Length: 110
Figure 1: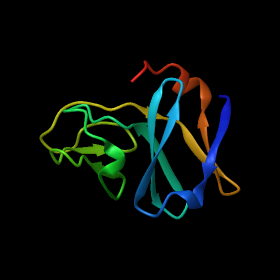
Figure 2: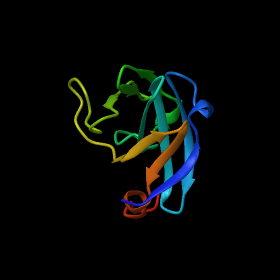
Figure 3: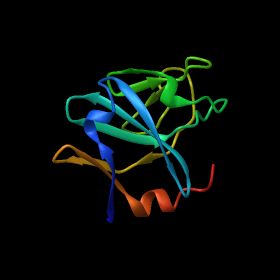
């Protein structure tokens, strides 16, 4: 994997999110605890809601439009809902967030 630095961990509040614009489209970054970050599509697979504006709880996010819940780990819908959002490899090193450049390059444009 080819990792690129996309920002400081402290730029994302605990149980919060930020959006990173890439050549492939917008990617949502979610911080669930002190050192845990997940990267997914910013668009809900249900109706296209902005997931970065949703509620982060545990390792899940609830879409702000229709309350669909998504796993930040797998991208799968939770509960009775069906579907999947894209997820991307991400890691934290020395307080910096790194994302796999090849993975976001394979994503179709938003």
